[in-house]
Image (tube, rainbow, N blue to C red):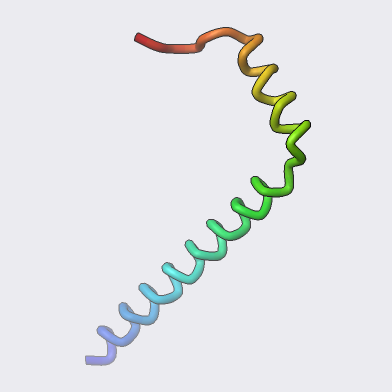
Length: 53
């Protein structure tokens, strides 16, 4: 039953890697200042609607 241990270990490593990626993207998202967020939203609004009902 050694192969089941390897599958379990691979699962744990996959979950840990996903957590690292989520944490990294969250840090990058929170690094914006309110002025930067406002400017980006205004730029997206100026582009117009890309899709919608």
